[in-house]
Image (cartoon, rainbow, N blue to C red; front, side, top):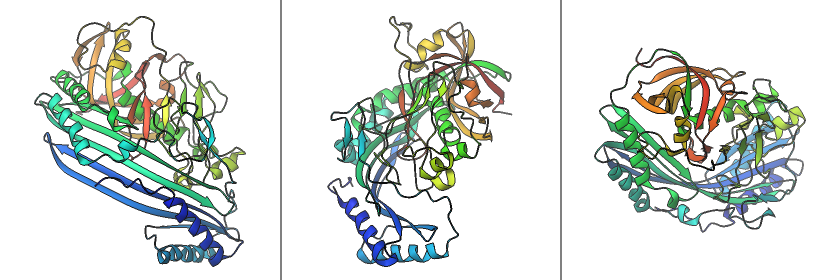
Length: 486
């Protein structure tokens, strides 16, 4: 099964039909916003070094939010026939009459043209669909995903492997009763796999807008090198260690920043660490949310949110100074700001969340400091940082991270998929996994960042369609609070 990408205009027609139904069912005083999207996801899974599952799902969903007489209600359906759409409108109209008053209703997005990133031809305002969209990725078939899995397994050199390769195609449109009407489409690919050697796991993962850019052999070899280098780990005492976090670990930092730090609802409720205009990070730190792909790569997200607000690159932190948080219309109205295009179906509950965050990489050095020897378990982007470490830990990945204090964003979690002790720029030994308890903003605070890798790597998150671009990070201190074994 391959995605049907011949649906140009179908979602916009659906959205417009629902807006007209609202007028006829609920009357001209009803305000309505409608999102219609077609999502096709295909997944090829492998375990024990063999593909064991190939699944695909394609669903068209219509979501309606209605505001009438000071009350708001919403509903959705996957039944897009005339009867199905009328039933959606009728039950939403019934629900809105029974809903409590909604004094914080922010109103509808007015007619607004979409934007195109400066990284794409034809930059400026446009209403087209492509936004760097890669048709080959949207049309990818099981054989193309299987080929990358095969290359991953072969490159692991006989080690046990497991993981997945996925492709996602989304075509969506928005319309409201104020006259806003926009549409767009996007495609995403990802490969995430592990290799295992005598109980030691090595990981390699990559996301992107083009399946063609994902090389299974490169990822398989990387995962295998990490697994072999992680055998026979030693245990270290708890304490504060200088660390190099590889991109996989940095992606977890960005994910928690997005969920709890640069979240407009948390900011409005004063539950976020973010202080606009304050120097909260090291001057080397710049973080942006980039849904349109300003570097010229295929756009990772749709060019509008579920309220129809056009999206653009949003600078969250520049040179260590916090500049913005992500807003939908409701959180923006609460603090007297403008929506940044981060509304989502659940943003009223969880708050608006940036889904295309990038920690800017450092400019490349004029002279390479990479050692000529085989780098072993060290990802290429982290090698120069490791070479400058006196005594500390190289950490591949963080997982099972949980928030202890949302205001200061103190996180506890475990290392995963490879930790190594480094002395004088050389890897000395593999280290057993450890528990940490660390404030993420403090770890990246003024004077705490000793280096940033020269390449930001696109990595998939737990949720489909979410990607973080992360370089390696050399940090002065990370609080390791115990061994995972006890």
